[in-house]
Length: 223
Ligand code: DX5
Ligand code: ZN
Image (tube, rainbow, N blue to C red; front, side, top):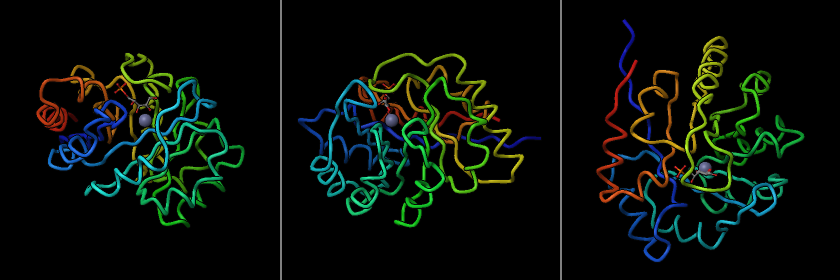
């Protein structure tokens, strides 16, 4: 019989109240979340600009849990050392922004961070076949990146299953994260498809009880 498992939850601070950022970081620290998810957007790779180094420095000062940093920027290699110095624990770059992805992932690990790669909705999971050995985390975008509050694209489930098969066939421990459009309604099917980590922004911070919503997401169990 297959074991029941639950997802690690990584609330996206993109949907936090920036006027009360310390309060929201502390709420996540005291909740059942596993990581803080930090979205960095440059206005080039995605059509939006979020926040950068000074804000992340402040988050790091208050945060007790690991920082899961998602770079939606062109040429992320320029900033690997900077994010290591800022205290990022996981550093995720986009497949679509890295012509030498294998080297980028090795550089992230050499800088002392977990190496993550994110895939836009149109990018097949199988393209990672020869990089998985140097990948700690694959972030499958459930929406086109750039904005919070969008709905999960339905073929994400199939993509999670494809990646789960690939990772298991290689006997690896690479984590599968789904980012964008996560709600309590799709948590069970995402877990069943093989996801390990769920990023949730608007569903958490837009709720009346963010800590309770994180607890609800973290308590869902599936095979
Ligand atoms: C989207 C970001 C996500 C976003 C998720 O480009 O990478 O992390 O904050 O937000 P929701 O959960 O609202 O879709
Ligand atoms: Zn993200």
